[in-house]
Length: 348
Image (cartoon, rainbow, N blue to C red; front, side):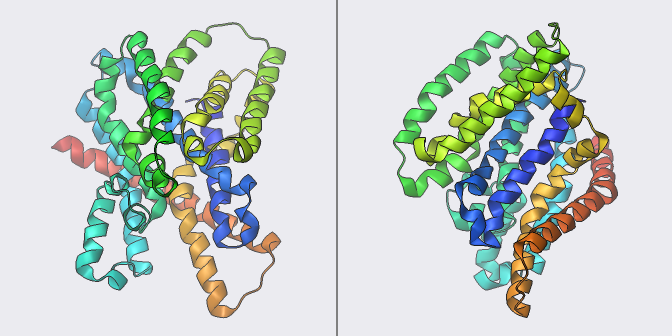
């Protein structure tokens, strides 16, 4: 387990949270908050890195079968996904307004995480909208056992990414503004290169982790990586069209942050290794899936009861409730559901 990367999950989940706080108040509609969607790119690249870190050699050496890998990933993502999807559908009464027939046409793709393949907002964002990214992860997980063998030699992986680095921006430039979200932000095929970047990053990590690095040098590199990421983040609105920021623009700064902190040798890494931050990273999946629930629920209650609460109180309160529910979900639902699904599927 690389504790620093687990803790970073919390910080990037917070960026996604900030990006969605505009539903509470227009104060959060500025670039500083809205650009928080980069957190999703971070999770896709991190996923490629961590999956390769844990399974690349095991699959190549046949110590883990494809079935075992797929069962482990299904057990990880589906229990909470199904729980949140049903909760949103029932509590939010989302099926009834569309009519049951039309509603099920949207619900069933969402249930099986196929909805991000449909480039229409009434599909990929209608139910628990953050779950679109799980549809991307599902594609990555399905393909990974084959990719682990296909890219056993890193030269092929580098070649594939070089092709993506040329083709993706060209295709992005040819997409009209109205379709960039459906084609380039949520589409699993379009986000697949992010995962490949993470897989290649693992190979770089393998080479780097044996190198000697002093505490002082590592600390400078960590601060530098954070500063470079923040520079990319802050200047992007004025210089870079949004379609590129959805993916390829952030490949380099995110990869730099992940690589430097994966070495765990500097001052900031010591901070990120704090057990409470690691726990925050552990619950980030729950936090990511339920935070928008809580934000919308607060807005609905505020409108119903005519609340006028300061943002300095309401946002920390929403955050605290989300953290509390995420802790309960992780310790009392996700862990047990994960074991139960593995036990059931491994008996087949």
